[in-house]
Length: 294
Ligand SMILES: *[C@@H]1O[C@H](CO)[C@@H](O)[C@H](O)[C@H]1NC(C)=O
Ligand SMILES: *[C@@H]1O[C@H](CO)[C@@H](O)[C@H](O)[C@H]1NC(C)=O
Ligand SMILES: *[C@@H]1O[C@H](CO)[C@@H](O)[C@H](O)[C@H]1NC(C)=O
Image (cartoon, rainbow, N blue to C red; front, side):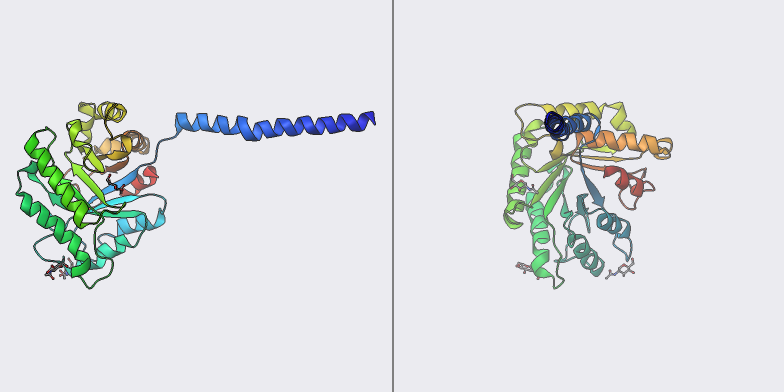
């Protein structure tokens, strides 16, 4: 009797111990560990200014299909904008639907603003052209889910603010007020914080590796993400870095460090070692970058 009782007690105590271990101690340890060591997830933002000759977009399409849990924001740009025609040429109408067929892809159309010096009517016309691809083409799957406004100003003034607001209004209207509509501003540097509220995402850095290091962008963007009183934070920032020096690009550990740093401060990142025509081919570290972005 006595022996049985002790054994039952043993079972109860060990059950309690195991429950505590599994239910509280281990998850707590894992959570604390993750918080300390893991790098937050980012999407890959691709300025896809590559002409879609047959096969030219395959490195991207391959990365997209083998990494279904990695999100890609792809900026399509037929002619520094949608081009004059109602639909782009047959190479584009063949390849863009291939991008859109993946649920981990959001395509956005490139629209230049020339720091809001461009005619607003032309900007709205570009937006409308993108939005009408769907109905003007007989090819299913042609279309974009948002707009990438290039060369937006970083210094605030009322005229620029009005211009950008009008462009955003037009885009949300014609592309539909769906929850997937994605508007991106690209000042390429940290803009006046009043510009951060309008779009879904702001590219707060576009430039060379050296510029990034020299001007301490990592720290500045991290601080921006922690600012109180503005709606935007880390996940609303994009970072596009090119001209990765050869010695950095050649070292797995160095590339890893750069990608980790970018992921820590921005919800969408891009990295290439190309030092000129940065976005017109895939750089030599494209595959490595995708691997590290996961
Ligand atoms: C598609 O791209 C190929 C290769 O650059 C080119 O030869 C062909 O003319 C293009 N097709 C169209 C319809 O523009
Ligand atoms: C494109 O579609 C729009 C709206 O559906 C229409 O008004 C316009 O005429 C079309 N353009 C061409 C060239 O088909
Ligand atoms: C972009 O912002 C609008 C307005 O806040 C929102 O409705 C939409 O869901 C956002 N888009 C994405 C892709 O999050």
